[in-house]
Length: 208
Ligand SMILES: C[S@@+](CC[C@H](N)C(=O)[O-])C[C@H]1O[C@@H](n2cnc3c(N)ncnc32)[C@H](O)[C@@H]1O
Image (cartoon, rainbow, N blue to C red; front, top):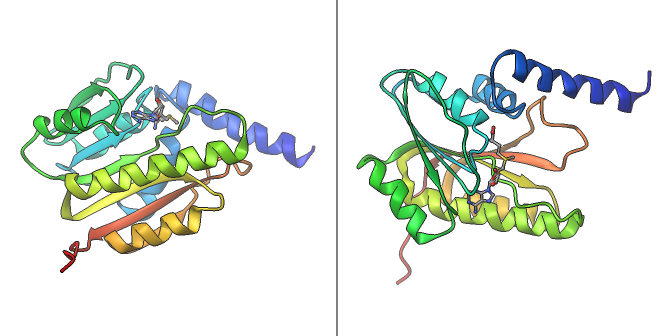
């Protein structure tokens, strides 16, 4: 049994598991594993899920927030209908647009407890281009999260590893008190994706 075959089989298992457990995407297990390890989402939380389609992370977030929680999912693509205890609001749009950001803010007058982003750019197949696009997207998420999150909020961002990855890490560290990089077991080993987990906003010091 080759290692490659073994790996593929293992990851297919997440795909099969998702079908069996009614999750829209095998990606759900990444959030389940991140949440188990880092206790990200709590009952009653308000969660914003950027790049949410087809809806696997939003399904998990809804389970975790429970009946008094709120999940806002945003994507360019259609998010599948989600039924759960908590309240779900889907927004179709580009989260890097001001207009979409306004729509997110209109959903609740509260700041979010958690901002999630599993967003990926449309893949070109050219490794360097895809990495740059992923990092640009992640920088956008970082910027947006500063205006959406509570002071003690949590941010989870996906980014592809590449040349500018360390720079992105530095930028996240400038905005948050604690920052970790992590790769959940269900993230394919051959995938260059990594997740940043950042907690507690640092006050942005105004330039004098
Ligand atoms: C890997 S999928 C997310 C899977 C999702 N976490 C799940 O569990 O179902 C990445 C998503 O990011 C979305 N995306 C990428 N850039 C975006 C943008 N600027 N605005 C909104 N959505 C975006 C894509 O449309 C795609 O649906």
